[in-house]
Image 1 (cartoon, rainbow, N blue to C red):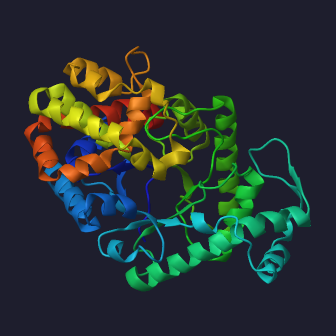
Image 2: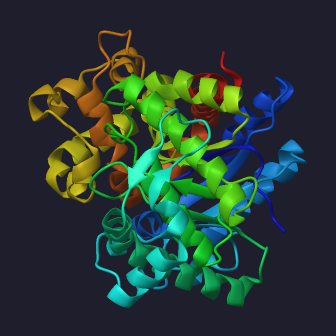
Image 3: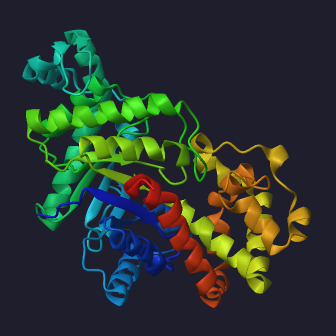
Length: 417
């Protein structure tokens, strides 16, 4: 049975050119004494935008692993798939993020809700979860209400899981369930109810992505109450540990933090909690690597800088179209976006300073960064011209990708340094 190690990191590679640079960051972690398994993730939507196939991502990962001599675990994530999109991911992938967002909040069959409540009397009354100081007090109506909100989604995840078992065989892939695309964060007892439903569906999930408090905008830092996040994260870990023992879920079940790249202000909380509890964590990053490609191109100067400026110019001109699919996970202030004419006059240092996520730099521009984060479609339309620019400036690009992934993500989250 495939088993995800305690620590893992989702690494997005939009154009399948940075697998070696990303793996190099995991090698640095291993050299520092800690195994962090890379999980290459790329969604169906991203493949459609770029015109790529999951088999290309698999090929890039396998080549990187072979050339760098990586002997530890690694995976390829069919990111946010459902029964309509899973087919192209079946052969190359061995990690599946079951996307049930469309079903969250849709009323479940009343008979199914009633049966769930009857099956789980332990969820009614005073629910004591070890590691959480106060018990939760529930009644039948509360449990039924939570089940009514999430049960149809869990049942949908069960259908996807059983389809995967039919096609790939039991134990031949890592299942993850994503519950983060909902209106409000789940309380620990709500998470416990969801996990009970997942166990009823006999889905041996190894990671679950709940919704946390605060905003997890693309490519920028966490916005919210860090202390509240820390409390929720700690209590969710306690709920998972309890559910593992109570419902027989996999012992390595851990939290998955989606849109986890660049959330620097919560990394210490994550590290401190997993260290003190012995829990694992999956940190899912994606577009941060694409942004480091742009930074590497701009830093290289010459044609690389010109490509970066062109991407910004086109993204600026099509910002409404590019931003629409990501409206709920970006906060761009149009007044803070420099004009393309202004950017056209920038030096390499000016472009890099505006884009690189260094909050101590007065020139750092979160609005520009978020726009470029969702602007990878522009580079995709450039086709070979963009890919050849990456290859021509490989040293600069790879250095930035590796440094960003290790120093800004792996080091604080997993090593605590």
